[in-house]
Length: 520
Image (tube, rainbow, N blue to C red; front, top):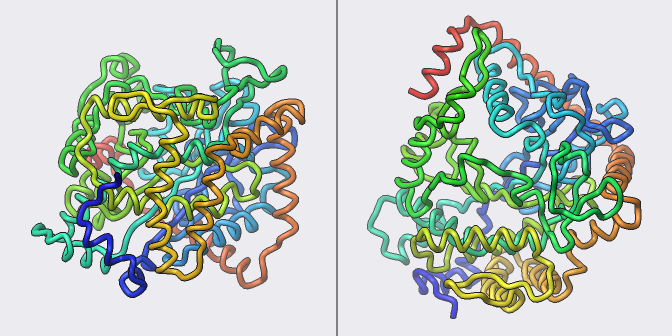
């Protein structure tokens, strides 16, 4: 039976009056995608000048590689705004790619040699150089191909009015910011328990181009020449083949409290790793990595979900969390949907809202090391063989059939879909939940199964993804922005270029001083 913390609090939010505070939920998306040439090879061209400064533009930047675009939507309380704005970004970007396209899938295109994957260059300022050296360090530690994998992140937070009402019902005696952080960490723990639903329902990377292996052996069978796949895989992006960190395998970052979490990250960026020390930090004047510690910065810690706080004084992420508490959470499990020109389907955020609310209200005891191993194993099973008939997951140290567990979670989420429907009116959340529930008993209806079917039909993953990428480009080019929206983007580009020039015109401290100051 589903257990809630503060049962009275749960009930009050079902009334349409109290549910209205949920209209203050703030959401945003970050979408990554690779630029590719007409042949589907990784673009070697610089970030287009018409897209502005990737250092200072608020919506259009790059992630690891010069060819890895990243689009960021402003936070909004309108549930439809993030994807509407994301579409506008795509409509602005598409005509400025000079014949290149945006790769449709999470797993990359034809990459060539690892050393030929270009690292993003942000300019000559210390801030720009810091970002570049950090990426050099990632290249040194993990290789560059891992950094070309793309996904979508969902940023989510609840409004102050909600927290005040919940704290009042729960008779929380702590300061509001401490209460909020405690509840967000409870949400995160439950997400680690139940987040395997995300790759099952939305995973769309069951196959890879053989070039990604860079000549290394693999247990993945061949679908067609040039394509390897997991017969029942949902998200190879989230498997050990994708985001894998040797040192982090033994890095224990607890989410049982804000203090434990931030202390673990602080320790990781200050604890030397013998292998990274052997690689070296500098080669004469050239920096090879920012430091030789377990993590160069907190951003290097890979996790399904992160607590986030924007610092008021430019603090490092862990310091900002320590000082001000959790502001929002960043959910990082979404693959790109290759069938959609902007890479994200509307039902993804609708479902995530329901799942995150359930995770927030559900009892969330501390995670023991045994349970953490169980959570990791469940995610591993779902991303590698989530559609396998008879799949079993671990629940309280016992093997349990996947489908009944998934249906039980949908049952538990239903009240929260109704809560959100009460807040916004209509049946959007309940109907979305009902539609997605069908994927549990019909694994062939999942995006991962559809990607495999398309890859078989079109001669392999690469051919299929290239066709989808070119199709999406044509669709976006056929949707030009109106004059007012286009002018807004042009102005944002010019502003970003001026901001970068202003930053670079200032006198710079020695880079070593800048790095030392960051960690101090």
